Amino acid sequence: MLCGRTNVNKFLIEEQRRNPSLVGDFSMLMSDIVRSCKAIAQGVSRGSLADLLGDAGSENVQGEGQKKLDVLANQAFLRHCEWGGHLAAMASEEMEDIFPIPSENPRGRYLLVFDPLDGSSNIDVNLSVGSIFSVLRCPENCSGGAPTAVDFLQPGAQQVAAGYALYGPSTMLVLSVGNGTHGFTLDRNIGEFLLTHPNLVIAPETREFAINASNERFWEPPVQRYVSECLAGQSGVRGKDFNMRWVASMVAEVHRILMRGGVFMYPRDSKDLSRPGRLRLMYEANPMAMIVAQAGGLASTGSQRILDVQPTSLHERVPVILGSRDEVERIERYHREHETGEDQPFSSPLFSTRTLFRDD
Ligand code: AFP
Image (cartoon, rainbow, N blue to C red; front, side, top):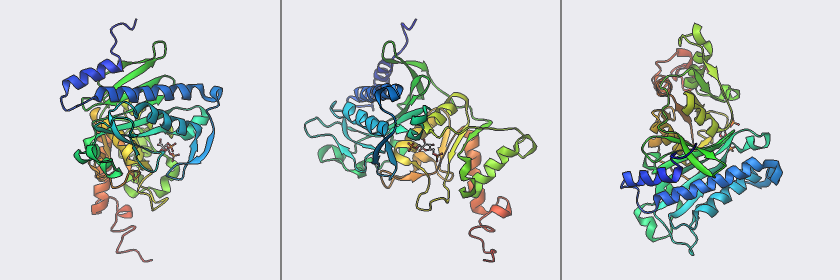
């Protein structure tokens, strides 16, 4: 019996009443985002039946091949959120430039940035994918003139709301409007997201980590140290065995961490020196950092809290280490110890890549 369950619209209206800084049509904007996710969930679940799998034959701004569903999911966000009068502009992984609200529609006070279909390399093999979104306030000067990309370049700590939809065995929406992290499950019978996981909390300790281990040779020494200690298990310095998972879909990894703890790493690596990491700050790292922080976890680059990073461009990349607080703090400590040369001599900067003692 579902009577009495809180649906996401009721939840958002109550949050807006509770928080006077959520001005204007905030809950209406969130409802538009929710509708976008429902439309994408429908497309993802139809898959081959609706001829929605496979490549679109185009590339996004990062030079990555787009899937048909990448393109459709991007359109779903644009079409559901452009007309309500709540937004001044949008930006997405799939578009090089920002999308100002068309002049025939009223312009609102918020900015929306999103990854319409994260993990889309998984879509053709029917594994979990998701959408990630972040809501920012439009700065003062952007309500008058036309918004520009610079208006989006706000640290994650200034996000008004963040969330993701996970298109898995069930479709879930997880969001934060700055008052905890809450999970909703899509009831397809009534077409509504119902509050099923209020006040999610990430356990501070864990025995599970997630990293793409095929990149090991490119990682920085602090991450190599952390992972090798986990792998050493009970007989190593950690004194306990660890388990490893890698779905290659950030939404699924973060969701697992919210459900049962763990740490997720896509650290800085030396595979491509032009990139400080793989994940995008504005529409992957920042929203996930808010979700995780509001659930009691932490998100860091290794040397700085993600939410404090000042963005310099819309599509910039950043190293990401997030999840259970104790583990993320440990990895941050390993980065500090590496910088000061306090970690093992073979991996410290004094003896390694920047060593005075190298003989080459
Ligand atoms: P896409 O959205 O381009 O599919 O990328 C997804 C993602 O950025 C993130 O969800 C994963 O953590 C990561 O890629 C997996 O990447 P690897 O294939 O390098 O493990």
